[in-house]
Amino acid sequence: MTRSVPVRIRAAEERDMDAVHMLEVASFTDPWPLAGFREMLDQAHVRFDVAESEAGLLLGYLIVLRAADEAEVANLAVQPAARRSGVAGALLDRYLGGALSEGTCSVFLEVRESNAGARALYAVRGFEPVGRRKKYYRMPVEDALVLRRVL
Ligand SMILES: CC(C)(COP(=O)(O)OP(=O)(O)OC[C@H]1O[C@@H](n2cnc3c(N)ncnc32)[C@H](O)[C@@H]1OP(=O)(O)O)[C@@H](O)C(=O)NCCC(=O)NCCS
Image 1 (tube, helix red, strand yellow):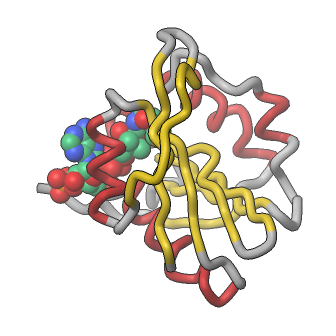
Image 2: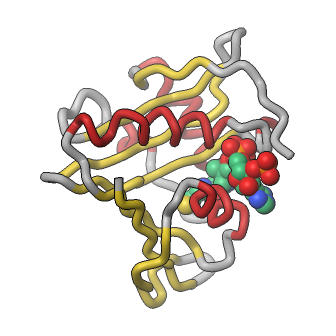
Image 3: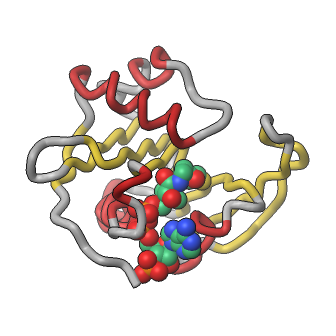
C-alpha cells in the first residue's frame, strides 16, 4: 500500500540538473548523460517536471516528449529511499490530468519487460501493451514492452 508523502511538483530548472543526473545514475544501468537532461530544459515540446520534498530535496522527475497529438514518457525515476510513497504516481497523474487539454490523445512509453514495479505503476493508470521492441535495452540486453494510454 502506498504511503503518501507531501510532494511539490514544478517545472525542472537548470539548478536541478546535478541532482536529477545523480538520481538517473542511481536508477538505471545505462543512464542518460547530464547533457541529455540539460537539452530537455525550456523546450516547447518537452514536459520536464521534478517532484521535491517540503525541504526542497529532489524526490523524482518525469520527462514527456510531445509530437502532434501523441506523447511519450521518455524518463521517470524516483529516489530509492522515497519509492512506494506515491511520488511517481503524483508526477504521472499531474501530467496525465492536463494532457488532453494540451491536445494529446495518446501517451506511449517503453518499459523493460522485467520491470514489474514500473509495469504495475502504469497498468493502474490504464496503460496497455501495444507492442514489443526486441533487444531495445542494453546492460542487460532486454526487450521493451510498448505501452499506450488512450486519453
Ligand atoms: C518505477 C518507479 C518510478 C516507481 O516510483 P514510485 O514513486 O515508487 O511509485 P509509486 O509509489 O507512485 O507507486 C504507485 C504504484 O505503482 C506500483 N509499484 C510501484 N513500484 C512497485 C514495485 N517495486 N513493485 C510492485 N509495484 C510497484 C504499485 O501499484 C504502487 O502502488 P502501491 O504502493 O499502493 O502498491 C521507481 O521504482 C523507480 O524510479 N525505479 C527505477 C527507475 C525506473 O524503473 N523507471 C521507470 C522506467 S519505465
